[in-house]
Length: 478
Image (cartoon, rainbow, N blue to C red; front, side, top):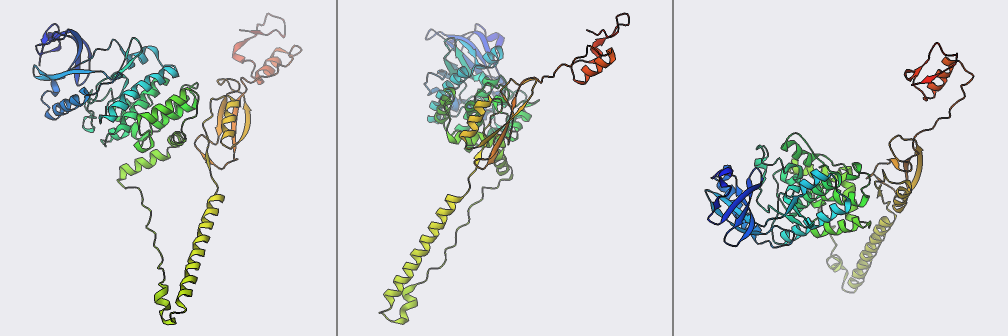
């Protein structure tokens, strides 16, 4: 294959005049080029030479490029052409004037919640269209999300980066992807639409906090954290993030695919409600609580690691129903109808009693509620959330050097715990810095004054200097 340096200003495949390289990765290089046949600028993605002899990779590249070429959507980079030249394969695509989302995050840091939600909704719009057409992206990350100067978002690299389990230890193969990899991809399992939505959840987490939830020294270490480690809610890093947005993110990055959003539409609907300050769906609240407690994640991990399917309910054994005709046959034809009637009435009465007892059991059965997350909220808002869940609020006040006055420092029980309705939840509220009454020391000796003030924590003896030439009782602070 021609080197990248000799490609500049060369005519590639007899049609594309290469101008400059605009990006590179472990699998391909991207160049800005002029399509001399149609007179337009294009981006040419040329497969790296180290994959040009890999038949399986070439087959995937061609098959996925052909599928992606059929995706025509405002939030998906258009693919114009594909082929092979100079001993390798390439894809010609639309040029997006702007920056990648990764560049935006690196230069701007965390994004405002509304801006992060808008970028996420455009990404979900692209994935909704792709998933409906049977295309799974497999490599959603901010590097593959391009933002134009007018804030229109385009998703690129559909189906090209095939980061399977066999590539986990290759240098550079998935290092850029491991932070956004779904647990099933890390285990080499089946990739579905829910896998893409998990990656979107990680990207949303990074936009809101400026950091990804899982980091490590290697791709393998990071991937294993996706499988085994529980994430911190985004609000634990940025307290201003509302609880509804917390819940959306936590459901999106649930360990098990069945606990996540099953479609981009559901994800988008909850996200829209969350940024408007509206409650999200009950399923999302339950899923987010399960992620915080780790119950669902642990169960899913155990099933995957052991290969044991979920337990099945035992098939109920029905009691033998007596045959009244056969049992009453010897008693004569005149008594048979009455025996049949009595037996049927008895069965009906027993069935009615059974139904009644089951209904009563359901009615009287105690229910539990999940304690919502209220840490870092204002005390009034926290109390409203707890009361709305049918819980009793007990408020404790505590001085704090770091937490604003009126904010919740701690809650007991912790968020996610299941308790009976009416149970007490104690919230500890900051009253700001602790105050101490300053005593009168004007009539005391120097040593006695120092000891009295030091006992109250008002001075540090190392910060006090006494000068022997000054009158007795004079204290000078540094």
